[in-house]
Length: 343
Image 1 (cartoon, rainbow, N blue to C red):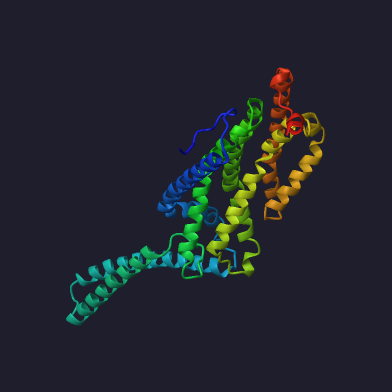
Image 2 (image 1 turned 90 degrees about the vertical axis):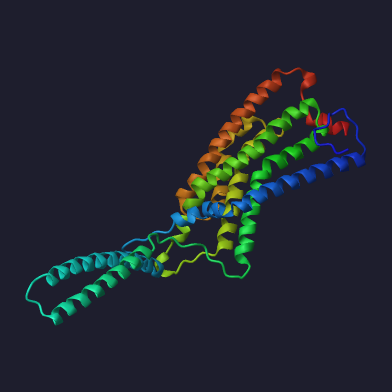
């Protein structure tokens, strides 16, 4: 019988039963991922539009830019305005011609000429009106695909990444439930906060990356020296860049998990971390500089700020846990050295 609920620490299972439990949890994780993937693929248009949003916002059409693509966008917008103005002028001229036709003293040739001119103006005004209505109102450019299968493969890949993000908390819970029997009651007090923090912090890092870091990075890179390039971005490269950046920021947000892990394992104390916070902040600065693809210091500081805040909060949490552990009875405390000696 497949086991999906966490097994008690006191339970004893055979190797076959452990493998059966692992298989069952893997099947459930795959099924959950497939459901999430089906939803993401169903909404792939909305999903791609959200991922493309930082790229859209980075596209600027300025009056002074000499970038050929921006000049073309300006020309299209100006042409649309000119077509609308020409249509209005033709309508006004047609009204004037109708008034002239009603005046007495005009021979048949003049009336025929005025009538023909009025019909031509009406037809031209309608064409200009249609042209003005069809002129692009937004200079937005879409990511470019080059291969025959690239639109399908790229959409499939983006939906897969989004489904993995949605399924991550459930997959981590299944991993936690599988390894839970190996922990005693005292050890679970160490593992449980870390297992809960991992998906929460990762999703928080992805959200921060999407709303803050990714737009700044894309805006800087897409507008860097743009007067000398026709900047067309390939869809696969853009989505790869976005996923890697968001994943790196999500991993960098795991700082509290690392701090709590090393302090609760007794490798280092919260007091020692606080005393050497200068080295830690320097390390965070180096990581932020490597992880952020832009060389400007503002983007690096934006990426650093939440990491420094998370480090300070994790040190506070580590101190709280250390005080609780010091007040706990000796029998309830978990000592890594004791576990190693028993093994």
